[in-house]
Every structure is written in C-alpha cells, then in structure tokens.
Length: 423
Ligand SMILES: [Zn+2]
Image (cartoon, rainbow, N blue to C red; front, top):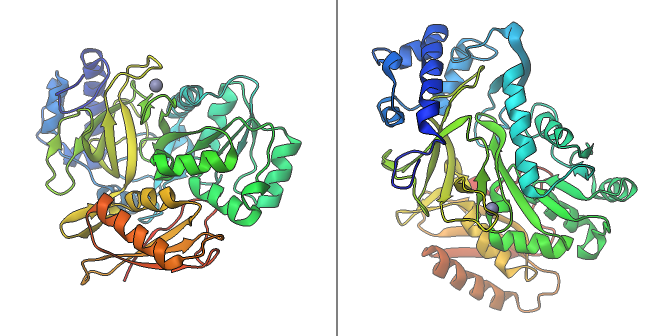
C-alpha cells in the first residue's frame, strides 16, 4: 500500500496473483462477470493498480443478478452443493439480497471475526451476551461463531425485552454485551439510566449501524453503562465484521487484509479518491478470494473515513470510521448531511435531549427538519431549542427547523434505527 495510492491492499505483490486467479475464475464460472469483464485481459492482471481498469459493481446490479437466478444470482460462482449457509443483507435501506457462504468463506468469516473481537478486548473465558438479531442477519450466527473461536462463552439472547436482558445478563455474569447503539437507547428508555445495572459488565461492543463511530454517542453510552464502548464494522456483502476498534485511536482497524482490496470513491462524481488519512468517500471493495457471491469493485453504499496515522496499540493496518449509508444522506444547500452527523449534535446535548431523533426531508425546503426529544429534567424547552439550532448551524452549516417533543414520544428500535423520513 498505500499512502498516496488509490487503493488499499496488504502485500499487493503477493495478492496480485490471488486476485488474478479470482478474476479468471469469475469470468469462467459466472455469466454476470463474464459479461461485466468481457474484453478485459484478466489473465494478464499483474499489478494491483490495474484494478482501476475494471468496472465497478452496484448493489442494484447484484439484486438484479439475483432475481435472474435465485437464490444466489448470476454473480455466484460456487455450486449450491458447496454452499453451507445462505444469509442475507438486512434490507434496512434497500430490498434484502442473499449471500452464499462456502466452508472456506465461513472459515474466513469466523477467523476474521475472532481477530476483530480480540482487538475489541474480548478474551478466552469471557462471557459475551449477544443482543444482535439472529436469523438471516450476517451479524448473527457468524458473529457468535467468532466469539466461540476466541474461546469466549456466548449467551445468544438476541434483542430481548429490557427486563429479560437484565435477568439473563446478571444470571450468566456477562463481561461483554454486543448490540446496536439503538438497543442501548431502547434499554435505558425502559429501565432509566439507573436501571441498567450489570456489575460484571466490562465492555460494550457496538455494531450493525454507524452510531459506534460517533464519539459523542459513545460517550453517552459509556456514561449510561459505566464501561468502555468499542465497535466493529461489517456488512453482508463483504464480511459480517472486517474491522474493529481498539479504543486507543479513532476508527476501526482493518482486519481482513487477506480478503479485501479497498478503494474510496466520491459518490457525487464517481471519482476514485486517494486512500489517505482523513479522506472520506464511499467504500468500494473487491474480494480477493471469496468463493461464493464474490464482488468486484462493489460500491457498498457505506460512507467511511480513512485513518492512517499510527495507533498507540501498534497495529499498522488502516482504520475506518463508518459515517453512514449514502441512501440516508440528504442534500441541503449542496451539502451532504448524514443522520450520523445530526446524531453527533443531538447526543452532545444528552441528557438535556434523549437519544431519539428523526430527520424529515422535504425536497422543496432547504432546511433540515429535525424532530427530537427533550430530556426529562429540562425546564426551558425554548432555550434548549435555540441552542440546538445554533449547534446544528455551527456543525453542519445548514439552517434547521427543530421540533422538540416530550420524552418517550418517538419510536425506539431494538436493532437498527430508522432516522430519515422523506416527505
Ligand atoms: Zn489501535
């Protein structure tokens, strides 16, 4: 790699042969890739920089490919008899699609998850309550398998009701809980801040939505739970988890260095950006060796920021912060606003505000319409509203129209929250 280059790939000299073999396999076995890469000399792919010559893939293409050949699509390159799991994307912002996992893919998923949770601080013998959903979600079974591989004990509670959570957590003496940031909000909304009492708890692992990358929100979660909060990044198309936060610097250390080649693209211009410290763009990823449902230059829809400064922990891989989904962005005054940016401002006011909020986007209105809740002890709601308006203007440089509602008015979510409504 790397700094100054237009992609990140660990040990490009070694992996170029791996990717060449992968591309040859794709054009031979997949009608989708045979057409997509037609006329390109993949057999002569001998330097990673040539990745720029390959076409990008969109999630719409993946979904169309799947509809043309259910269950896994024309881009799948493994025999169904070799597929050990079929999972799916969560379908939060777009219709869900399936991903296939061979035994080798599963091994890579689990080994990568194991390394990620080790970075998060989980160790052998630790009891981890898994409050993520199971079922088709890639954050379910593969995540639990990663903990198991680490020698931890998994309590697969799922996002249960708050009283059950407390009972199970205390009965099993958990040391860690993995959940979405929204689930913490859901718990405290029901239990109150004093109610989330788990004396054995030593850390919260956040994932499945961008909140864990927002320092202001992490601070609130750490205050509520009384323990450090870390994060992991993943998605159904690439890997359930491929990067993890050590807690000593911003961002999540990339772990899947043997499996992914990453690029950053400006979603407005489609221009590939330098993979440099501080650069923000849409994450574009290529599987180096995925056996089933591999992707080539997939535009993931995730807006990320790259961190390449040294980390005190000594790990040298780049770190990524997930800022949100491009589908959730609203454009006001030519500025792209992501819900996570609004969430950072709202969370900074907690406990004067709760953590619940909604953005209502009206195409014909150049103001940010925000619905949020004032906290239970707030006396002067008008004063809070003026300070919140000023903070949004200062941080996001857009005018806003804020409606402050009583506590417990807006919906809570046990898994991923919906923050954006388009009117
Ligand atoms: Zn680190």
